[in-house]
Image (cartoon, rainbow, N blue to C red):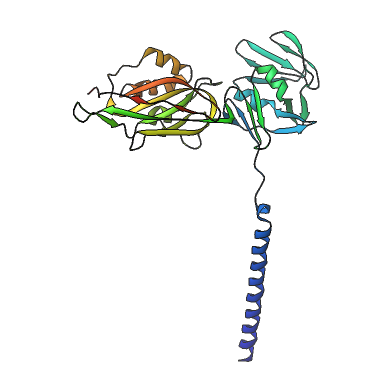
Length: 302
């Protein structure tokens, strides 16, 4: 009996210490709430698309690993060990440069830069100014949000779009909301043609898609809205849920979409567009502005 009493006493004492430890841990969490959270991660975008690249600041200059940026911009990237020169190439445009060399060639013509490429941790890093000079892509940054952007689409500058989508039921009931209709904003400028069969079939985007397409669905009152869209020019694409098509795809619409989507995606999308009525219009999203665009599909074809 004595042994049992001693063990019970020890157990009670251990429980007391454990609860004291938990109390101390809770106090530390309340006093230092931020210690358990990592700092917000730096994000780098090219034409509104998130790119996995390294960035660092040196002497108040932003430097980026050029290879991921070049590939995301549609350029081929190569290194010639013999000449110790790097080349990025896209179509007829070719740029060559060396580390720490203020001279570089653009389509065979010699150019100068005050901020040449450097090597850090075996990464070929270029300044934002140098990358803009090479590609013509505008650079914008928000150090407070740790967001850096190259191109015509800027996640630093966000805008919205909204509208009402309707159709005509018959001459007696008249206008009804096109409940379930799909709405998308498709970027008009892409560095690499988009391969996205899922979007072509469903008019939707999954969370893991990274192609700067933004989608939503018309609600029960006929309303739609897409918020926090990177500023830039898009094709507003509305796909009816309640009106069938005459099986004809407008040639201009097809030509516009063919500049954006690759061949396989376009084949699926073209067949999809033949089923229901649709509307395509170019719109410009501006910072802190809400663009309004509504549409009535009229009567169903069948």
